[in-house]
Length: 191
Image (cartoon, rainbow, N blue to C red; front, side, top):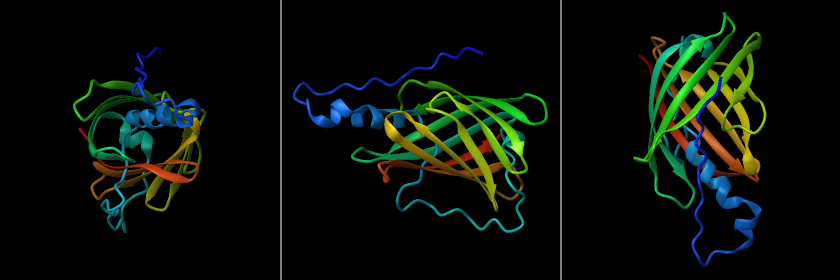
């Protein structure tokens, strides 16, 4: 499947020619614009999930979903996020999820997740924004997703299924050199 994946452009000011630009720090921060689902430092804590079934990303993301959230990137103003997704099951143990992501009124970017079950509560896959493999594992009431991005960014997402199974809260943290550079809170609803 071929996707039209729009890559972010980083425009440096005329006077900025520092070491950070040459080492890719600014392009790395610009890549954060493609991500969806982070928590602000004082973001809402996940609710108690006692009695809620474990998250099954293949079942949850099959069909249409809509997510809204707030993305906080270090040294930037908070941005709203709006994500429209359409998931297609590839058999019982795999899914392809296509998403259109809009941040703060900018043009939409398109990304594709592919995820397959590789064991009980364990998943592996790919993401157009990721540099390398995506892994996911059920951890109690949460699904913990991990992947790397270009320029040494490390991403951890936690998806908490809510009672009724139609809503999940997604919290994501992005780190560079172990330091948090972005956080997102997102509410995802099955349509």
